[in-house]
Amino acid sequence: MSSFTFSSKSYALLLALLVLGGGIFFATGSEVIIRTYIKPGNDYEKLREDLRSSPAAYFAVADSHGASAFENQNDFINLSSPGDNVETSITKAEYFLANASRRGLILQADVQLFAPYRLTRSQEPLQRDLTVPEDPYFQFLRPHYRRYLVEFWKQLPDLVKPRDVDAPAPTIRESARIIDQPKEAIRKQAQIRTQLHQPIMDISATWQGRAYRNFLKSAKDRGLQICMVSFPLSSYYRDEMADAPGYAAAREWFRSLASEFDVTYLDHSQALADDAFRDVDHLNSGAKKDYSRKVLGACFPEFG
Image (cartoon, rainbow, N blue to C red; front, top):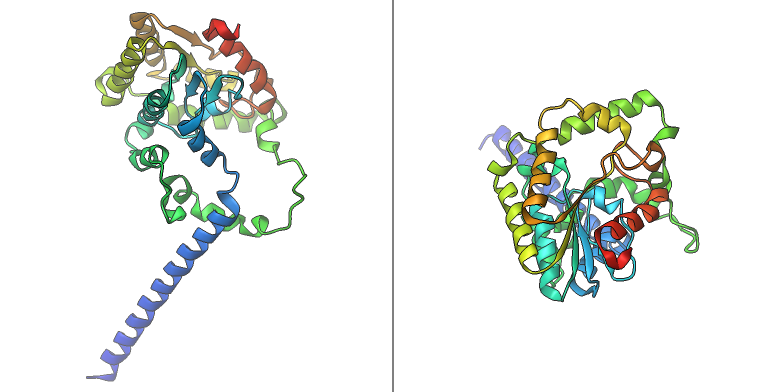
C-alpha cells in the first residue's frame, strides 16, 4: 500500500470522525438548549396543552394574523399559531371539537392561506406533534423547535445570562407601530409581503380549497356558530394588493362560501388605522385587546 493511499484513508477517517463528532455535539447541545432555556414557558407548549385540555366553548384557528389579533378570555381560547396552513388549522379545530362540547369558531378567511408557498409545504409532522399526547424523547427533532435550531444557537449568549425573574418580558416588537418607522422601509416590506401572499387564481381547484369547504360544511352541520374573519391590513399592504392578481377572486371565494353555508363573514381588511399595526399585516399589542372584544362581540351574541 502506498503512503499516498494510506494518507488518503487516514484523512477520510479523520474527516468522518470530525463530522460525526460535530453532529453529536450539535444534537446534544441543541437538546440541552431547548430543554433548559426554550421549552419551559414556551407559548407553543402552552397552546399544545390548551388544545388538549381547555374547556373553552369558543375558539379561533388562524396563522400569525390571528395569533396577533386575539386575547384569551373567559370561555374563549385562541389556538392560532404563526405559519399554520389550512390543513393545520383544520386539524387543530377537529381535534379541539372532538375533546369537548364547543359552541363557536372563528375561522381565518385570509388570501395568504392559498399562496403557493403555503400550498406546497407539508405540515404533517407539526400536526402529529400537536395532536399526539406523548412528548417525543428528543425535543430538538420536534418540528416547532427544529426549524429554529440555528437561531437558538445564535441566541445562546443571551439565554445563559442571569435574568431578573421579576423583570417584564421584552415586548418591543409586539408593541411597535409602523407609523413610527420610515415610510420607504414599510412600503418595501409591503411589496415583499404582498408578493409572497399572492394567492393562486382558482382556489376551488386545490385540495386545500376543497378541505376548507368540507370542514366549513362539517362544522355547520354540527350546529357550531361559525365566524369567518379576514384580518385587518395596514394601508401600505392594501395599496400594494389593490391591483395584484388573485386577491379579489380569493376574497370573493370566501364571501361565496359564507353565503352558501349561511355563516357570518367579517371582512376587516380596512377596519383599523395604521397605528394599530406593528408591521404591514400584524396588529401590535396595543390594539389586541380592543380588537378581540370587537370581533367576539360581532361574531357571537354571548360576547356582545
